[in-house]
Image (cartoon, rainbow, N blue to C red; front, side, top):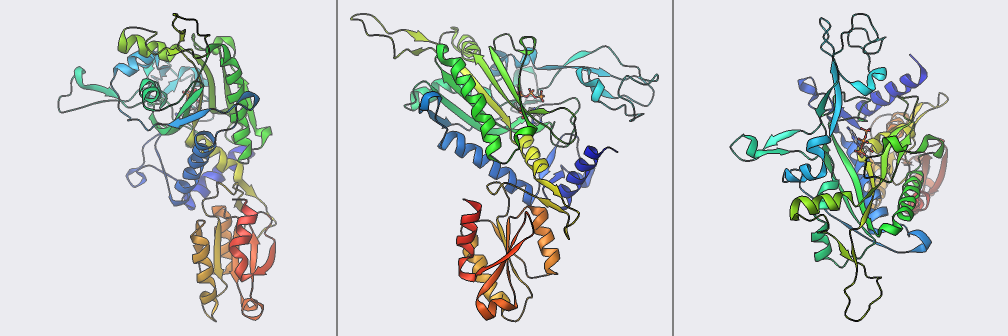
Amino acid sequence: MNQQTDVMEKIVALCRRRGFIFGSSEIYGGIGGFWDYGPLGCELKRNIKDAWWYDNVRNPPLGPNGREFQMVGVDCSIIMNPKVWEASGHVGGFKDPMVTCKAEGCKGLFRADQLNSSPCPLKPSKMAGESEKCALTEPRAFNLMFETHTGALQDSSSKVYLRPETAQGIFANFPNVMSSTRVKIPFGIAQIGKAFRNEINPRNYTFRSREFEQMEIEFFCKPEESMEWYEFWRNARIKWYESLGIKSDKLRPRQQGKEELAHYSKACTDIEYLFPFSDEPQELEGVAHRGSFDLNQHGKHSRGDENAFAVIDEDTPTVAGEKKGKYVPHVIEPSAGADRFTLAVICEAYSYDESRASPEFMKFHPRLAPIKAAVFPLVAKDGMPEIGEPIYREIKKHFPCQYDAKQSIGKRYARMDEAGTPFCFTIDGQTKEDGTVTVRNRDDASQIRIDKTRCLEYLRDQLGL
Ligand code: ATP
């Protein structure tokens, strides 16, 4: 086993043991490509989504040359009129090439373009197609959209899809947002929500799942300013990951080559992260210049006019008697995966130090840590709980905090280390004498003493929140 695989196995075991991530419906043997977040994982993912929403929608960065712009949010339905997916091209083109193996006892299904990283089910030391027993079929196109039906009749007229991306809900609502708000180009619409893809080979833990959450922005701008906005979003998104503790040497912006780009796209950068399960960085987010393709398509399919969603060019000089010019906005799309980023945050936080009593600890960025502090009376007697409980209740009003009076103090610190809790406050014998408590720091296990009345203030200062 190489070192990296070993690290990944340790991460998966810790996530299961401590309630970050469980396999979906595990008591029935699980189901491939679906995952549940436990108590710690769901807080972590919520913090990630909140940070994304706050930093991009409520308080977005300034644009090129310090320019301010507006961002608004939507929360659209998962099932939409199937015409949306015809217009977007998903019904015709959202397909991966699939091959099956006809070897006796195998029946493996693989993505034809990922054979060199798909282990053979019969001989996992080799990749699919490598052993002489493998009998792979020719690739055939497999549509990744999950189908279901609305209403009682299950025929082709009631067929609908679970959305494979959140983006189309934003495009379909572009005219509604324009008419119901006072947004002006350039502006963005953001959405966080579930998406579903019937991936042929879900794998690498939650990295490639069949149900996942996306955090997407569609940013509408003037065609002639679009490359500037593309560069802006690409850089802003990289900075965002760095601001949450992702080290820049593990992040890689990869500009797609011309041959990889969709026919309508002028440029696309994948922001990639070096996960422990792979030697090559893998996509966390795509920042794509989509031109006016989506608005043109929805204009054509819904109103019979590809320019139906054109906006007035407020910058055209007003000439008496002449109408202002119009244009269909261009779109820059930063599209991130909430689950992929949660996994990256977990991998980045995972730390192992043999010299510590509890070697495994999660070094989460303070903003993302599921629990920010814990309060421990050293023993559940001698007046210590009476001092600890009010401290806990005070902190709890402001930050997620836990109180625990059972087990040895070492075990309690170890549990908090694995949960990634930045600080623990311990009430001990000295507290009654001089009113101080011990503060233990997760990252270096160091301890200092502060006055018991200063716990919340200390936490605020240290977390910077
Ligand atoms: P990939 O090439 O890895 O399949 P993609 O290019 O198809 O990804 P997009 O369609 O650009 O992905 O989706 C935007 C984001 O949604 C991705 O960057 C990723 O974070 C997330 N995402 C896409 N597919 C999955 C999946 N199967 N499981 C988890 N997250 C996903």
